[in-house]
Image (cartoon, rainbow, N blue to C red; front, side):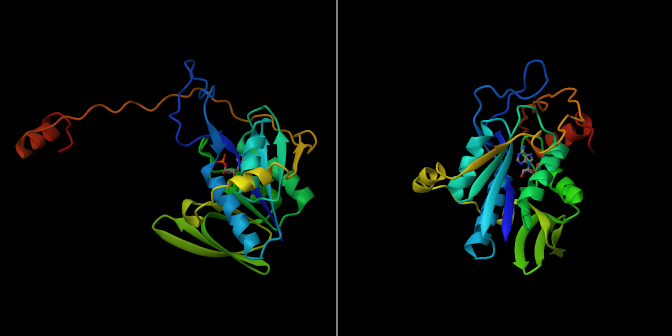
Length: 249
Ligand code: AMP
């Protein structure tokens, strides 16, 4: 059984985002980039399936510029068997990524595709769902547990107020939630080994996919700054302020 996992190169989650002065987007100059955290969980899940003898191969794919190769190398250092880079310098929207993943899936014929529930840069939460729809496959989103059994996958989903367990017919697309697993760190020997693992490069044109954007970003703004709080001396003063200044009671 083959598992295809998607790994996106995004601004590292520890970086304090700066919005460009002209409000056209986020400033990426000299910013640390890393693998999207939900995708680390996707890679980890693929590796665990392989280690359990359920999967035989874990293939990682990424859509992005040449530098996205580093993200693929990280997936390979974690333990993925090989990588596929769909190279483009354009911004690719979730629909474009889903179409590219569908094209790769048609070549690779995986039984399971694992993607993150969302990329922390665009917070779209769309790619997995679109991919499942384009392929006509089952989907289990926001997975906190995945169990494969022959031709089916049991996926426990994190939904509002609880957990929902569903059974999917394979092949299927699963999107990862935070509690699915705790991803491993790549060890130094594995980082060295990963240098020799193959990364195949393709372009959207090779895959016959039109990635032209459907959306136009009108503006990007920083969140409003929080105003400093005030200390009150007594409950009476607090009640007075809530009544007369905040108008909430
Ligand atoms: P999104 O729908 O943009 O929130 O992304 C959801 C998931 O789709 C991510 O966690 C990745 O697994 C995958 N994905 C989105 N964009 C890319 C990309 N450019 N390259 C690889 N995977 C991607």
